[in-house]
Length: 295
Image (cartoon, rainbow, N blue to C red):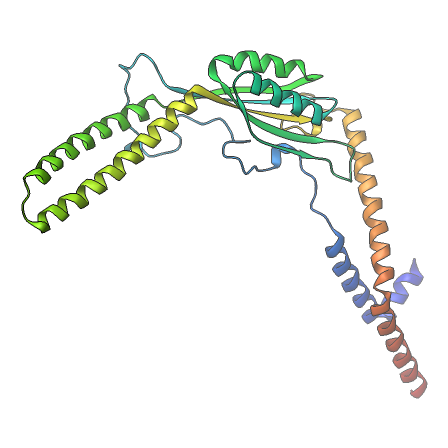
């Protein structure tokens, strides 16, 4: 060990160059760490998000007026399940087929099988008719060796729907009045101005009808996101056990394998880049030896 420290003291520049080269090579070969699904983001809106809270984080004045007198509430239901399965691909296929048989459809799916581990994990998002939701969830649970977690939550959009309906009624009344004005208008300028207002009103009406239709369809078809993995640690949940030796052992083995692979890759890259750093090192040593001989 003392020889190594002595060599570093006498060859500081060599040591610094070696560190820089190793750092550059490591940056080239390093891969992003594999994180559990709970730490991943999804491009699908709503997938992996926390259940919506009351008020949605909006200010008081941006919320629609409450409508407690409405009996048939409009509720958008969403479900999230984490399942431990033997085969992720087969489970996804079965889930898709079941959704289609119940009148639903596939929204998006994803499967990952990192080289660093033997674990396969993924997720699938589907839409199921609300009246078939319970049947679908029971079937999905039967596919699993273990149901790790399950969350079912709903968002009451009745107030928003009623608010849109009221605004829509106002716009339609306003449109009728402008149409009456248009029928009586005689000047070209007046006709053009009224037509512009009518076009603007129609755009607002179409936009509100689109929002209304979206809320209706979303309440009729529930969204279900199923996380699948061959190992519990890849699923988005917090283990109930405080200490699990078998899980820690698996993590340690995976970490060791990943480290050895990266170390082997680093050695290969250093060997390949020797055509760059070795001549530089040789030139430096020759110059250093000549200076010593001169002195």
